Image 1 (cartoon, rainbow, N blue to C red):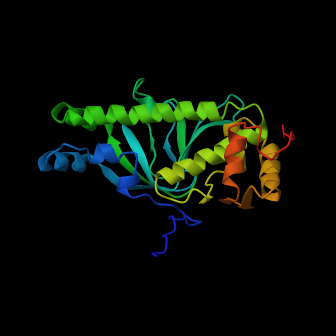
Image 2 (cartoon, rainbow, N blue to C red; image 1 turned 45 degrees about the horizontal axis):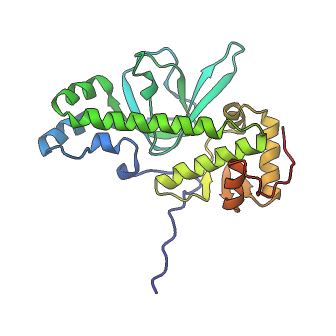
Length: 256
């Protein structure tokens, strides 16, 4: 009997995604284009743009120019509040796209900053629009990409609409796990590029609550937690908790 090949486990450094696993793949290599059209399209894609940790990809209010795909590393999107704090609105992992939310207003409604050294691909949107006039399939593929992003945002709103803190964190971890799995990486072992403060902001919780929950999940053998390195030990129970199922073995205890 052939030995089963293990899933690709994301090393506890920077995960990378191949073109085939990238959300921009259907724009870069759409079905139905001929060789000359492909060369035109390939010519406008700017690959291997590098951001260091803490560097901005764009800031809120800046003019929209391009859409991006994360090749390696991770990026957070956020808005700045009146008190100077950041409200995190999203995390972008390898293979995922960002910048689409700025298409309508032609200005970025939020800022995007690298959480670690991050490799990006960039497609100038004006040039993509020009090519779409000559390659109609590009318009269709762009709409599909945007539709996927909308569905993703709606799914997160449902997941993060939980009332209890432990269900919010469980839903967040399930979302991260699922997104890595969709790109061909391990759903059980991964590294969280974001800080506990960023997670707390995203989930609408106090950072102390998030830290206590990670400790509790570790003690209850839901997870193994070593800094930012996470291994899911009880996938069934974590998913049940994320879905607010009564059968998960969390009793009635909640951390608020």
